[in-house]
Amino acid sequence: MAAGDTYHIKGGMVGEPGALFIGGNSDDGIQIDSFMAARVTANDTSGTFSARFNVADDTGTYAILGGGDASAVQYFYIAVVAGQIQVKAALVGPNVAWDLISTDAVINPHQWHEVTLVHDSVIPKIYLDGKLLTVTETDITEATFWFDAFALIDGGHIGAADSIGGDAALTLEFKGAVGKVKYWNDALTAAEVLDNFNGHGPTGNLIATWDMKDNVLDDVGGENGTIVGQVILSDNHSEFTSKFSFLLTPTVVADIFNFSVENDTGYAIIVKAA
Picture 1 (cartoon, rainbow, N blue to C red):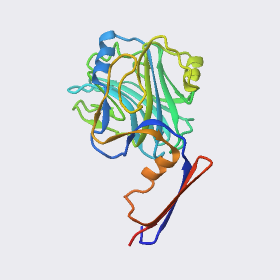
Picture 2: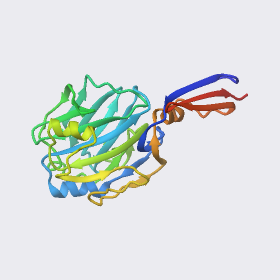
Picture 3: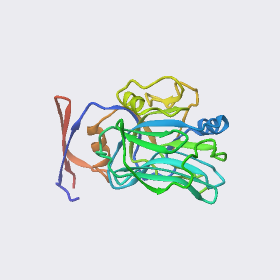
Picture 4: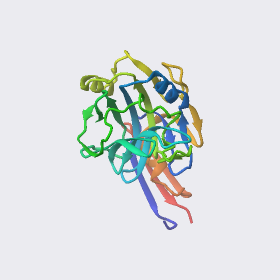
């Protein structure tokens, strides 16, 4: 961009609490190792994850949540892949247990959405914003596998895939914000998934909740997270703040900056300096 170029940013100002991942930074995430180890110990045969997310673009591959083993290839993750949702799990080998990717998800960058992964001991199901998605089964060799089969998983992160190479490294770091994350040790019904999306999720069998309101504490089970790397907690990550954070990259030095708000919509005009 040349000096004098003008940038226009417009977006809603009403947002949600979230952990902001700038994207592209190595090993940035919210560590939830003790939670993952506890679910393996509990031998869960079914379960449900839900996660609020606001992704910065619809072209990259960004993990919302993942679990893995530091010294062997055993992992699972939930990710946004080019505007669709992928869920994948693999055991030592690596032998892929299941790898599903949606075909009809509608994910708008800079907007809040909610993904739900339900495993009912038979097969994983993916929901977006309370609606069951159609998926392509890239691999579904061991559809029934859940924490009861992931005996080696000893780590996990919100905002990254954990040790998919069995080397304790974080990959597929998220670009955008991840909001409230929940886990039930039971398979939610379709009606319960929709209720949860509408803010009235069931409390029975709810094992963990990280709401990202000023901290990364688990308000239900005490499996508190730990911020690793450059993760920023925001009380109000909105469409405007998302665009302002990610559309102005690399960082723009401005000669002129005008900002206004009307009817909960923010407007910014930025003129690049020489």
